[in-house]
Length: 425
Ligand SMILES: [Zn+2]
Image (cartoon, rainbow, N blue to C red; front, top):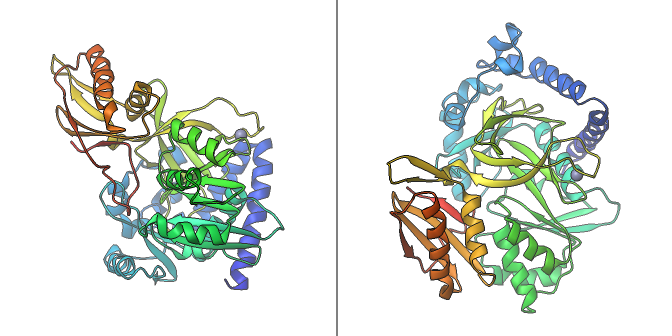
C-alpha cells in the first residue's frame, strides 16, 4: 500500500469521525453538506444527472432507479466517461483470471456480485476506495494501536480489500472456493484476532471449533454478505462466546453496520435512505450514497426486505434495523383457493421451520413451481414435522394445494451467497 493511499485513508477516517460527531447534533446539516458537495463535485459531470443539478432539483425529485435501469444508463450515469462496452470485457477477463485490478479511465472496475442473476459493473476511484477502507476501519474493524490479524473469507479477491493491509493490521485472505478443511490448518497457525465471513462459513468454523479441529480465540466475529438469521446468530454467539457483528453492504453502498451493542445501524451520515413500503413493518431501501461520485448511486431501489428496529441504547440516532429478511426475489408467491396471489415472506418460512423442532440443524426451502415446495431438512427425520407445520400455516391462509418434496442436498454453489429461502418460480 503506497503512502499517498494511507494518507487518504487517514484523511477520510478523520472526516468520517468528525461527520459522525456532527451528525449527533444535526443530522440534517451533515446530509445537506454532503449532498451539496456531491452535486458540486460529481453529479454535474454525470450526463444523466447534470440536468437535475442545473435545474436545482431537490433530491426527492431525482428519478428513482433500479438495477436494470442503473446498468442500462451506465454510460450516462458515471462521471468519468466510461462506457459499459469497454468496461464489461475488462471485468469479465479479470474475474476469469482472478486478477482483480483492472483500471479504466483512471478508476477501478469490478463486477458486482450479481445476486439477481444480472451482472453489473461498478466503478470506484482511488478516493472512494480510501473512503471505503476508512469506513471499514471506523465502523467494522475498530481502531487500535495493537497489531491485529484479520482472517477475511471472500468470494473473490479485490484490490478494494487488499488495500487495507498495514503493519498494525494484516489481512489474510481465504478463498471461499477452497474447502474449509484446507483453511482450518492455516487458521490454527494464524490465530486471527478478527474473523470476517458469511454466516454459512462462520457456521462451518463454529462446527470445527465444537469438534476440536479448530482452536482459535478471535475477539471479533463479523458476519457479511448473507442474511444472518436469528437462530444462526444465537448459535454463533454461543460457540464464539461473544457478540457477532454484522455488515450490511452491497455494490450499491456500505449501508449498515453494528454498533458496540451488536445492533445494526444504517450509516446515515453518508448514506441517505428512503423507505419503499412493502407492508406495515417491511420496507425496501431507496439508497442515495452521499459520497460516491464516480458512479453515483442516487435513489437506487434495492430489493432487500428490511425491518426497522427500536432506538438503540448506544446513543446513536442513526436508524436501527431489527433485521434484514432477504430479498423480494425470494418472497414466495402462492395462489389461494380463490385464485388470489399471496406473498409469503422468507422470515415467516424460516421461523416455522426452526420452530418445528429444536433439533433441526440445517434447512433450506425452495419454491420450485406454482404449487411445489422443496425442503432440505437436517436431520432428515424431521422432514415430516416441518411439512406438517408448514401445511398448517398455509392452511390458515387458504393455501391448500401445495406439494412438498424432499431434497437431499443444499442448493448452494460456494461461489454464491447461501440463501435458506429461495423462490425459483
Ligand atoms: Zn447502537
